[in-house]
Amino acid sequence: MSAIKAKKSQMNTDLYNLLTGIGRKARGASAELSRVISSSKDEALYKMAGGLIERNDFIITENQKDVEEATSKGLSDAMIDRLTLTPERLEKVADGLREVAALTDPVGEILRMRTRPNGLKVGRMRIPLGVIGIIYESRPNVTADAAGLCIKSGNAVILRGGSETIRSNMAIGEVLRDALTQSGLPRDAVQIIPVTDRNAVLEMLKLDELIDLIIPRGGEGLIRFVAENSRIPVLKHYKGVCHILVDESADQDMAESICINAKVQRPGVCNSMETMLVHENIAETFLPRITKAFYEEGVELRGCERTREIVPEVLEARENDWYVEYLDLILNVKVVKNMYDAIKHIEKYGSMHTESIITQNYSNSQAFIYGVNSSTVMVNASTRFSDGYELGLGAEIGISTSKLHAFGPMGLEELTTTKFIVLGEGQIRE
Image (tube, rainbow, N blue to C red; front, side):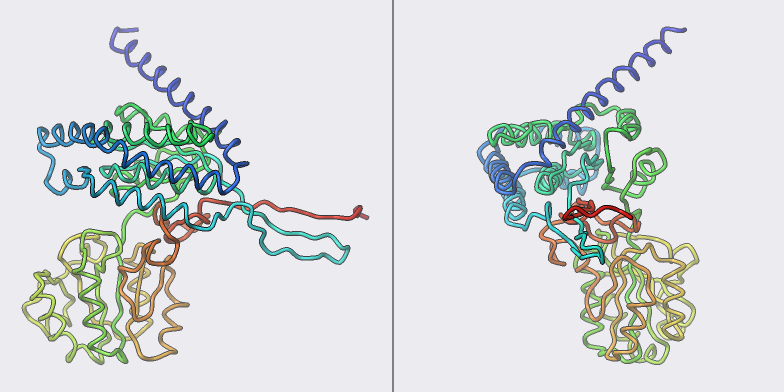
């Protein structure tokens, strides 16, 4: 074996040993954490929040090293802004942990208790999933957000952030782990993978006997890499190609307000609108006003042939454009013949994320709700509300557009599963 091959083999062995050790510690911690009462988990979350504030100098010093390195490597201003921590941003992260502590603990909830003809009482109880692996990019706040949700739901978590935030993540992780120790909870319930080697992700994705679920958070490239290489179930969404249908019965003032909000308020996120569908019966009146409003907001419009006949300055939308998640002030516009035409378009080009209809017709709203197969379907509301906090989950760990086992924004309940519980009085099976 050449020296290069031997070195590579040794590196792979070292990574395997590192990741296996982390996984085993997490598995042991998850068993212990699953038996911890709610008040003890809440105490740990409050200590975590307090630790972030008390030790913000330490965290920001480490974060500044990441920022300086990112700057020297020529990362974009937007990327550097995402990875930068300030006292104000840390305060918001701490507030998020306190909010999670205030949420109702789903663990132990009894669901659907029924009495069988033989007198057996059969129900389901919510239990933690076990060990959750989270792979993410750029934002060091995810380290605390994800850890808080996992601890509250009784799960151990293994966190693998991007190389650009390794020092920040390690610093935050140290604070969170110290808080667990101070609270009498297992320190290894939160672990940060301490290496930036991409092969560490591949080794992590092989630990199907130690990790129960993988949640990737980041760009489509990262998520596809994880999904293609994981032996562990992956909850994911590749992208958010969200649609709004402006129905023929829509209040046009409402439609304009909602569509502008859905595209302009924050275009670089997965729940912003990427395609606006307009019923042909109102296209000639609605399109001139809405395109004028979009142009005033700096939005580039790309439209179908009928759209460009009505508003000639709109650019041509090519076939591939309908699939694109722009994450920018760019919007596709299409005139549709009817509800069926709109739903077929969403089925072909959508990403099962979020769709909305603007309508004053109840039958049409119900047809849209039942006909669209996305994780969140709305009536007379901006797609920007497709968010765990906005939907009343308190917080979210991500969004799933795969139906097993969660669909849509994932909060505490989605980090649990259920087991059957059976209560008898001596019954035997005949």
